[in-house]
Length: 100
Image 1 (tube, rainbow, N blue to C red):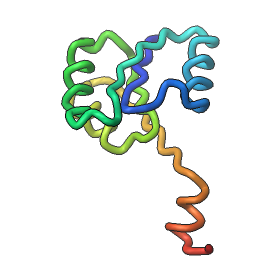
Image 2 (spheres, one colour; image 1 turned 60 degrees about the vertical axis):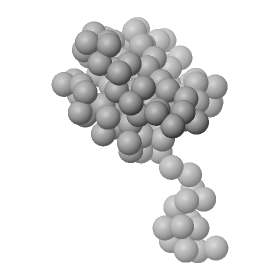
Image 3 (spheres, one colour; image 1 turned 90 degrees about the vertical axis):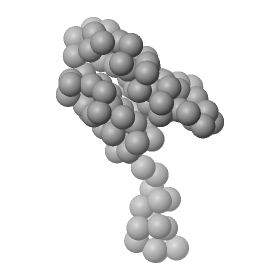
């Protein structure tokens, strides 16, 4: 199984390190396709990079933060997309629930 780990994610972020190493540990081939989040053309860069892979993967994993990356993947790729919808508890408690 080949998984395209995709987005504007930080590869040094522990969540991403754990996910990539876990996928490799179970035998998946991980192809990283990312853009710098500070790049003003990051989504165009992502689109070009994903298009260059020519669907040489089985799934796209849109890493956190994933909303825009998921849309880019959906437009470019015809493979199944897995979106990481992870968000912080701070966001859930403070912004969504207004508890603090």
